[in-house]
Image 1 (cartoon, one colour):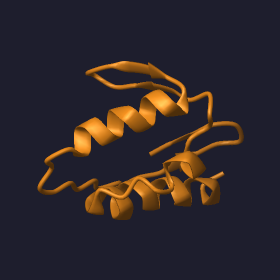
Image 2 (cartoon, one colour):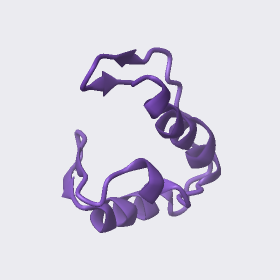
Image 3 (spheres, helix red, strand yellow):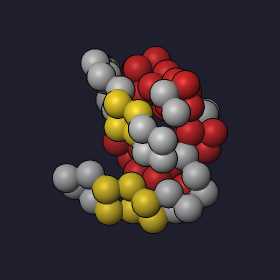
Length: 77
């Protein structure tokens, strides 16, 4: 399971730092339900639009994923 999270980790730590959303659809399911403190989104199109809005005018972006915990059917980063 931990290996399955590597593209997810790479997306947040490398691609978002460059405002590159090209692999968003490879990391998230078309039926993604994305919940953060600001919004609740359903579907990949809504998530892609959300990230485009967040990246608009952004000077820098950095994510530090220090721990990945993985079990048989779920994982957290």
